[in-house]
Length: 162
Image 1: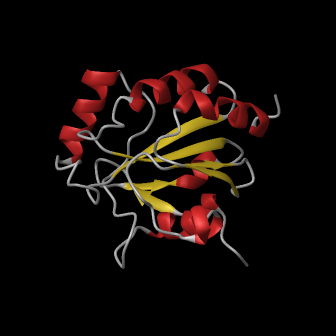
Image 2: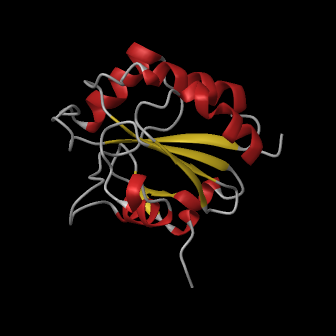
Image 3: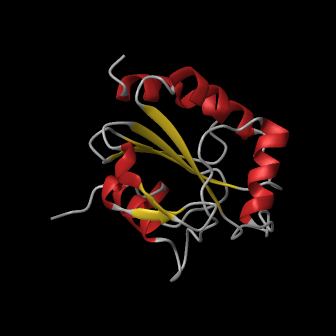
């Protein structure tokens, strides 16, 4: 049987198991994030989406990644501090992962299989690629790094049944 997003366990920023099943029946926006990227200001828009919908069975999960231009060099602790201090991030920012290559985290292998990018390529092209996952654990849509969080709001509302 094919796995659902909610069948995976990832690592928290504290390197503890983080079971994605805790978000079962929620709409989840998954984003590979970085602190030193031109798209880093999207943290502000992501937090706004989170605040708007967090009480409606919605969450955002940030996965720091250092695979693009070494734009996330910090430790998990430094990343947490950066997100809170600079952008007031309150949604979960998990442990640093690889999203491409042989050491890509299994959750990213799954997401890329479920929603290939342009021309069917599975590779993540840059930081702030976003995956919208439905309450059933299936990927609804993949969004490019330059897609502003506010431009995903309608898709989120639709996934929430609004």
